[in-house]
Length: 130
Image (cartoon, rainbow, N blue to C red; front, top):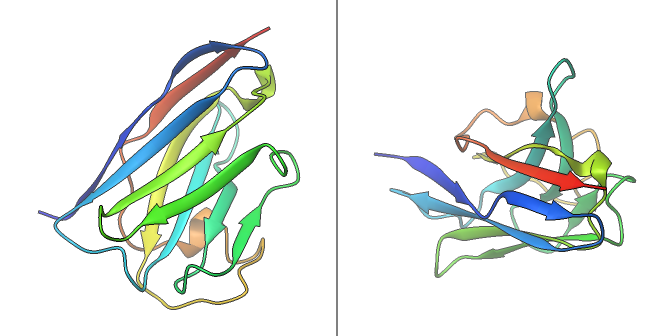
């Protein structure tokens, strides 16, 4: 069965760090476009960070730039999102996703939830208290 299994969410205080993990089960991440997205109640899901299918190009939303880092470990079939200096406005359900179409020089248009037609994780809650 093909799926993405997320872990690492939780409750932290402002300024603390968390690392989200997303394990691919039943398939390899190589050649996939990969992304992290988040959603709060009443708002649309938004792109947080993406990495292209070569693994060489990354994109970060302005709101998380210089605080979050996306990475992938092909051998471990795992995607990571390292989140530093967390803020209350980062509170959301975070989702990882893959798209089987190749990409390069990834930007905001490609790092859009509507462009990811592959597999989605179940979501993990991140809550940042002030």
